[in-house]
Image (cartoon, rainbow, N blue to C red; front, side, top):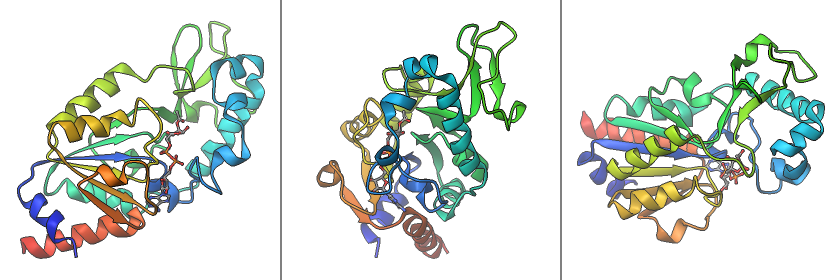
Length: 243
Ligand code: OAD
């Protein structure tokens, strides 16, 4: 069924998985867009930017505490674990737009986080870092020793991506033999530009999504379906071929 892909895999060493909210959908974490998406129910301009936080820190903090609870109650799904299993055969890099920490919890070794991580926080003034577990049930944003608010370590609208994570992602994309784009609408920049970097560098680009996206007609292979089903199936076929 995946003959073309298996042939490519047989001549590949470095694989990148570039993931978005869709890979965590089967863990029960809502995506951002689409009918059931987060941005249908909440307004990003009231919640996901720095001025909203400074205007109403309690509201924004509560919203992240609510999302943290969803994440803490969720488990990595077969899509996440299949990516870990690919490490038995390839040099694997995960580049994720997700903040849910599920790739790390699944056990992926090399994960670059382009949009932050909901499990972490930092002080808006002195930048001191704090783990989520330090104040699991706090309804209002806790204060740092320096007296300022502590915010979630999430890249909000209008903010720069972490430059070290982005630079490392660009390099991994350039060096990849196969570049999987999994469960992302590919419309949020600059994160989405990583796929073009891989493509221009000659990587074989494979998209896995339940629906076509803006990039589907530009990839080398589009596989329609759930990542939690397709990724384990690719791995199964790979194992059978290697036996
Ligand atoms: P989106 O919500 O924009 O897109 C999710 C994609 O996943 C869609 O293309 C769905 O068709 C697909 N999808 C859903 N379930 C799937 C499944 N089981 N298997 C495979 N695909 C599935 O989410 P992102 O592309 O991740 O930014 O959004 C990008 C960024 O926009 C997020 O990182 C966030 C948001 O604003 C920040 O928080 C900074």
